[in-house]
Image (cartoon, rainbow, N blue to C red; front, side, top):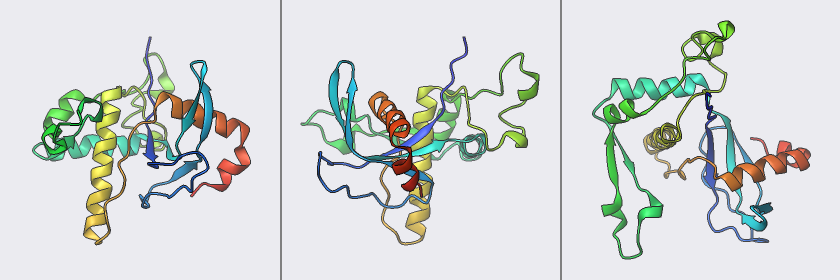
Length: 195
């Protein structure tokens, strides 16, 4: 059975407690929707969800730019910090792991379409599908895409003399469920927050 992962990018608005003012992170120059803080019942308990921004699905064009950058610059690197593996005593600078683009390229995956579907042949590379969501991407590949996209945005911001932006990442399961429920129950509010 083919598993599909649509990549959605998320910005977490750190430290937003219920009833607190929600300070927004620096603009990323990409289209994202603010999902306000709130609570959701998840796995039989009420869970507070901090405010965050969520993008639309990542398109074939955007993901192809990522693959092309990996191919064109195999010696460039991304730094990865797995926050869940850092202990309070550990120096965060020593927790960084660097991956060369060439190494990442060997690990990332994407799908060129669905087998047996004539109308979607060459789905990933055909320009008529440029604005369709990328599919068949592994969780690890999606994480690398988020790191790469953050790096690209911050390089552009640095060139303009602007401060770095917050990191892009994948939504958690709880955030995904909360955003979907919020969109179902509060469509007017969510649509007004679109940028």
